[in-house]
Image 1 (cartoon, rainbow, N blue to C red):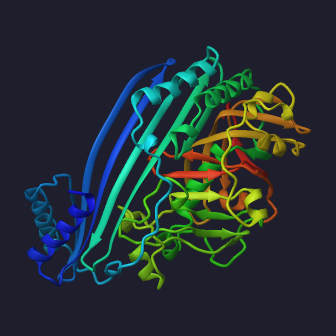
Image 2 (image 1 turned 90 degrees about the horizontal axis):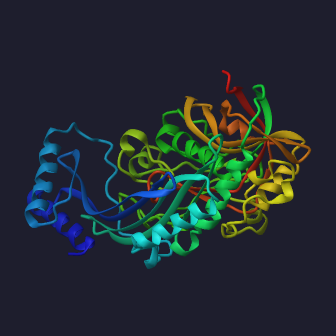
Image 3 (image 1 turned 60 degrees about the vertical axis):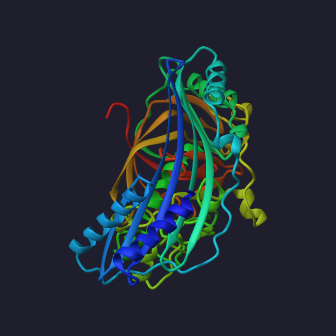
Length: 475
């Protein structure tokens, strides 16, 4: 049976076993995931898994319950419905049940590439080999993964949807023994992923990061590469643009207020790449502008949070949303070129590593002319490759603490002069992106993979007026 056939069969089972008044929604998702990992510059693991999961949520007798399973035969599907019905009898009343998604047209999904969906281990290994060879003898580690997902949705209100998507991602590190450099990329098409470009980039950054000096903590003008900007987008998504947290007054968001610099426009855009065209509640997905020219314009909702806020679902229903709230998982910070043209951003471009426009002994740290142009405007500041181990200290102001990694460089008069040892920082992300604080936005974006396929963050490099580094390597 197709995924849609399975979903329809479960809806019919609910109708037969629970009666015509029961409301049911069913998602069926097939996932083919494959991962090729390497360490010490050779492949040590190649794994693949394929599975189909069925998730049922039903509302009957004023109570709501959910269940899931992976057995697609009639006995397995019947057992799933029976478990959910038994759970509903024990559940508390649910007076805030928002009802089911009504029948509505579902847009086509992102471009689907069969070469990516059905990529072989040899094709992933070829990209790993290219990465390792391009590193020029440095020790390397990382992964190349491909993912194919297809799914269907059906509910007892007569709504249904289908979709499929494919994604490829690579994340690799090169090491000199004293320093590290990283390069990562997420794409819709296997042919867009160039291991040679990524390996050369990681190696150039690792070599440029050797022999770092320690600088005192303090506020610095910074240029953040896309991998660091991705952490800003992720935390803004989880803790800011989350409709449940906004309703509970746990978010910094003030709808209609100018909370960001006029150069900042953020769009959650799942159909831009690698996402199914509907959410877990069957709501059609679409692009949603969250920040428009510095003004915060929206938060995201599933059906429940939307009903509580007297708003419609924005297509962000997901497992766990009742606890964590709905979260945008495909956030794009639009580049300068896209805003100037009033349209979409230019396609991400893999440029050569080590663009000489930055000059100086740290020139290899700059991966592309776009970043180099931002660095050239800095009188004294820092170029930051990556943030990690970030944790929220104050959700209302979104104050985050974390560490730099994979390379920091001192910039003096537009030139990268020295590698710098890692810092700890404590910074309010909205404040750092606030009015007058964004001094430059790159013209080209880099799509950064998340730990979960289908989740990504796309951003250009940014130049910010101030970033609060609160500790150095010595404490």
